[in-house]
Length: 433
Image 1 (cartoon, rainbow, N blue to C red):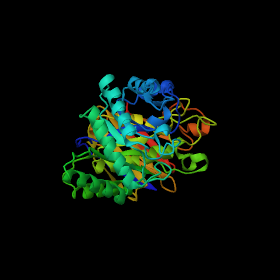
Image 2: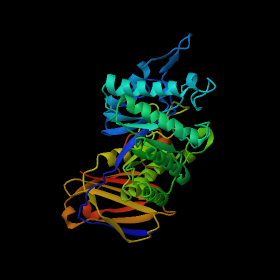
Image 3: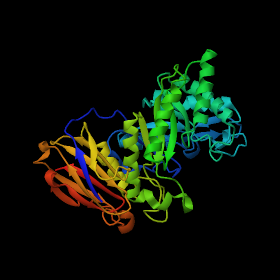
């Protein structure tokens, strides 16, 4: 299958969308991030969303007489590890400390006492932003409350929790931004009910607490990702009293497989890198504000590559997804217009280009059923420009197969000779030398 892809020399303003990372559910070890500081730092500044903060780090303790007290040591170590990587936390206020839950033994129930929960939220924001002066801007209320395994109460109960949490958080630091509902997928019903509830609060004289709207997206086709964002903007037209940012606070390939791994071990292979780039191309076009790739690091498992969602393995081995994100985060400014001049336009070939002949980065991926020959046509200003090409496919830079995470360049070509023979499920990163 022959393709010709044209890159134009007319840089447009780059997207304002920011890519962050998410982490949760892999380990309660407060030193979990210590071994990835160098690779994490190489990705540059970003937000990292943390959930499981209350049930993992032993923050809430109850004395024999029933008195509640807080121990911040483990949580502080996690926050300091993120800061050491030049990352800023987005703190997801979840899950329920077991001692505060209705049954006294569950992390996914409503609190037995909303007063105790509110006191915990106020203390957390105060400790992080007032005592430690960390300036954490974004705070999310709970994680996937539309799923019974994560919230064993009604959705109206979640909305009550949201209001109590927002009031308690702003009590400690009125400058923060708070949002939700962090549903497991884009749900018009749940998001609409959330906004209706908050509109009612405003009509009753309460302050508006909708600084960002959030949901998750796993395994969604790029067209669906784009449609969800457009639908979100349409819904917001009915709520002019709110002007929230729009976040997808977790996204990656589809969940599934034995042992709660991703389908077909895709996160360990080039599939996840291609899905990432395809998704953010849609997110950019639809002007999403922030997207958080789940997740930064795998938990410990039977081997380095065991199908978890991390961009880094538990023993700090980068996956193809890591290198795709690194190239995107470090791309030069200016989006270069691209179009497929010849070949199928069914979405099996994708391309994004940035920069100029002085410094350029081009992402090219192919997912068709048979091999393809792809010519990348660049403007004449690139005629003396040479590129390093890095290929990810079944036989190149596939550490899940070889066990070797070392990144190896595939070819070095002049801009006038960019003709690539690609196999199905291939990704090429092109960077000027």
